[in-house]
Amino acid sequence: MAKPRTPAGRARETARRLAEEYPDAVCALRHENPFQLLVATILSAQNTDERVNLVTPAVFKRYPTPTALAAAETGELQEMIKSSGFFRSKTKSLIGMATALLERYGGEVPSALEDLVTLPGVGRKTGNVIRSVAMNLPGLPVDTHVGRLSRRLGLTTETDPVKVEHELNAMIPPDERGIFSLRLIEHGRAVCIARKPRCEDCVLNDYCPSSTVRPNRTSAKANAAKANAAKVSPAKG
Ligand code: SF4
Image (cartoon, rainbow, N blue to C red; front, side):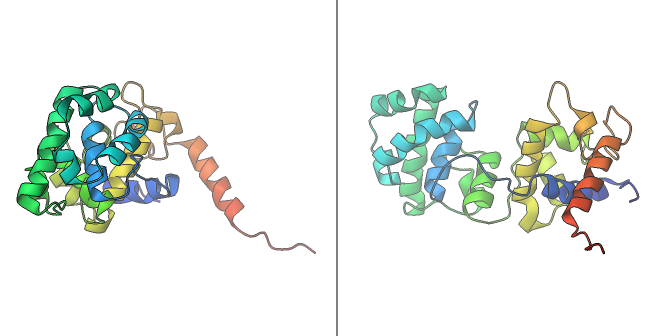
């Protein structure tokens, strides 16, 4: 196919190819409702999802509702989340977030981004995670991976996450924004690594302006082999 030459064309093609590469991309933070995801996302700052998933079961059990979390004893909660790092400020955010939910939103997690970002510990990235993952609403979280890949792929030149988000929103349909972000994150972790991108293994390297290799012959071959394997061979004889 012809190489996409515009940011919008590259965004569309990237969405298409990453959907093939990562059909099952999901948010790795374990949760059962928007409130739990809000707690987990606040805990995930400067920490891995795996480590957060070790901490949250006890937190969810002890503080199953905003009412319980708002009434948490600071020292007890700090102890419980200590291993997630920055535990003092995260404790403050968690109790403040739960208190704000009770005082301003009747104990419910609001769905509008402009409301979500008023909660302690919640910025646009977290707000967009809550909307897209827990509420199935449009939301494109821009984390370090999404920003880096968007720039390397020539989808934007912006470095401010809010501007990156606006530019991507203009190119990605509302119902695909959350999954597009999750797939960029997976690709950023697996292939387009910050320090040394593995361009030779990247399925986007034939049009990525930052590619350090020529168009991906290996991947093209691998893709052709995949496509052939998917076809049902006609019976011989
Ligand atoms: S070709 Fe290289 S720089 Fe471009 S997206 Fe792939 S890994 Fe990243």
